[in-house]
Amino acid sequence: MKIKYELEYTLNTSPSFLYARLSTPEGLSEWFADNVNLKRGLYNFIWEGAEQEASVVQKKINKFIRFHWEEDENQEHYFEFRIHTDELTGDVALLITDFAEEDEKDDAIDLWDTQISELKHAIGL
Image 1 (cartoon, rainbow, N blue to C red):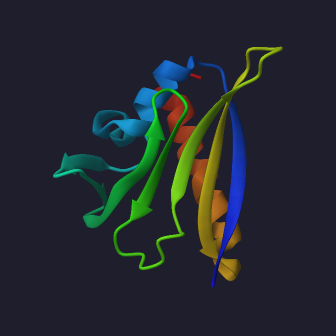
Image 2: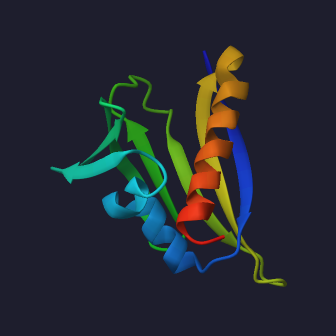
Image 3: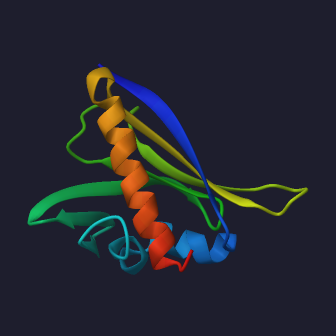
């Protein structure tokens, strides 16, 4: 059974600049996957020749985007990128919500840490 977990990363960039990296095939190709295509409303993610399709479940420009993997039969499972701006400091945080099998959660978090390092590199942090 998959469990939900959330991660938070502080990124020194504007919400609109960050949102473009989270919601467009070009932006996602910079850090999340080797290549990303958008066809008929489905995002096609490619890693070392393996492909996975995801649909956008919900989104709000410069705030969040939620994807659902097409192969996951449980409609309650998703992965989400949410942008939070601290009203006092102006710091921008990326909140990631995802699901993983309990015994795979640590590996999934390590993977996100690696991906976010790639994202920071891609946006010049």
